Length: 575
Image 1 (cartoon, rainbow, N blue to C red):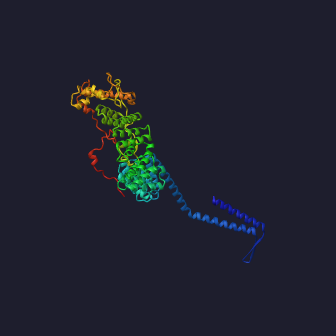
Image 2: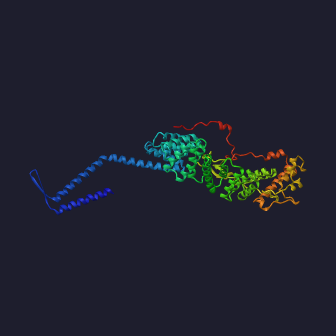
Image 3: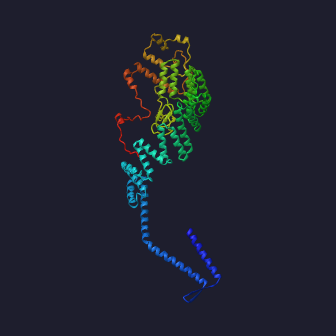
């Protein structure tokens, strides 16, 4: 475009010049060898322009003839290069789509038309073809060859890193990622792996430094950066709470500021503040997060904020949490635990009844069994609530990649991912089904025991087998009758006993009745009275179940001891 514009400007200037000469006539006289030549000024200008044009055209023709062999050679070389790039492009597309045959064919054509020293993509196409054909050893050798060229060094490190991950060589993968992160900090995969290495080594300061470089280069979003930073700061505070309380306090408060809804950060901040005798600030912080997301660890830390408090003072603090978040199962469970420890069993039973009405689950029935043990010592009731706990939905727990932990951890023990733990119900119990018996209705055991007096106990000694046993006197009943008596609810007999109130029964009467019927049937079998009675030894062997770890699939036999101790030969050379 610029050349065309320049040409038009030159033509316009020549036209203006000739027009100017045409308006001013004149003659040009030249004397040469005794002769005098006289021409008009216009003719002389036209002849001068024609001579210059002829010289330029002649020079261009001679130059083209002189450079014609080189131009022809350059033309064929450019044509060959274009065909090579076309083959290379087709080969890369074929490798990406999984067509190893076409990728190998196009790779051969491209390598014959292009030079591997001038085009590094030939190495990539060749390595990808080897991987598609399952020639992993040759592919690793090709990636190692790429490390020698500065242009393909990062590509080779990336290939070796992926191969090491595929083979489970975590040390080799971390080594290659460290080298890539040192050479190019902007690589997200390298920096993430380097952060994983720092977290595995508990080097929280180094991980925070790498995360800062990711944030400065805008590799991750601001929200993701704040989340990861909060996780690392929480882990740092938990690690330094005993060695460096000041640094732990600063890290925990910063983590809580970055993520106010992050429960582990609030717990770490509360522990540090309580350790530094900042009780008021710690309680305000825990109360703030309790209003948003109640958690049992928050309740336990809040209730035990002052070590010297009595059990009734802790019950008051539990009541305070309940007032902050009413009609929540965690609030009711916190009050029930505190009341059980304080010996206020009626308050504990009312709270546990509220928890079961809101969300019946395993911990509620276990706590109810503890309350029953502490208040009445009735083993029949205790066994009943323990049986309900086995069949109840499981409580939420800290879960990451199928692994269930009692406490939060910054990284997953399975994949090493940062911030993978979540507070949720484990996956393996989501499909649990509550079985309901079909053998007719049965009376349910109430949560609140019916009130009894000394006169009632004196008039009915036969119903209290535990009192007779404590006195060392025979109760007049065999073992089966005692089991049935323990399984029957108080006041369910037809001879004038008090029946439990309707509001004191459990929220799911059908399930409670069915399970009570099942427990009664088991009592008949255990006493030897039923038709399907078995010997005690056989019954105990059938009821035993082998526990399966939560982090292992039930069908997985695990790793053999000989295989676990056998060393695997290294497949990678660390550069």
